[in-house]
Image 1 (cartoon, rainbow, N blue to C red):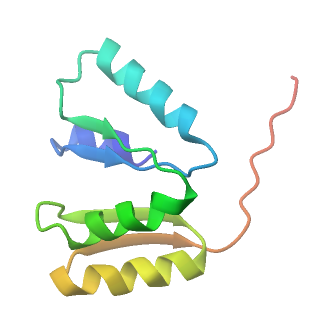
Image 2: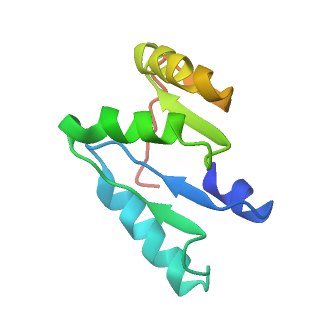
Image 3: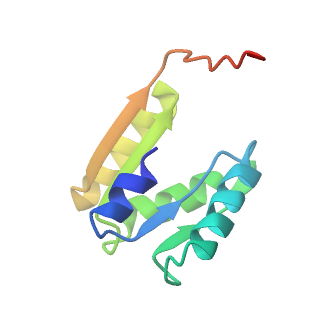
Length: 106
């Protein structure tokens, strides 16, 4: 829900999914390729639990990255905010809460 508007605005996008659900992001990458999105415009980075912080630190400190958008825990959001402060990077956070997604048969 965040990559679509970024791509529509002409921005390249790097998606780093949760280490618990990487296959959804990989499938989205395949669909983007089939839809004709050029190479390098929509990228997916997967990482296991041990490397997730390292990947996040690189995205937060790299001057090429202009904005970070994150949905997840308040604790991780605070860490991202701290990591992004060195480059004064734009940051959008959706933190805390439990937004369940319920699918009914009908």
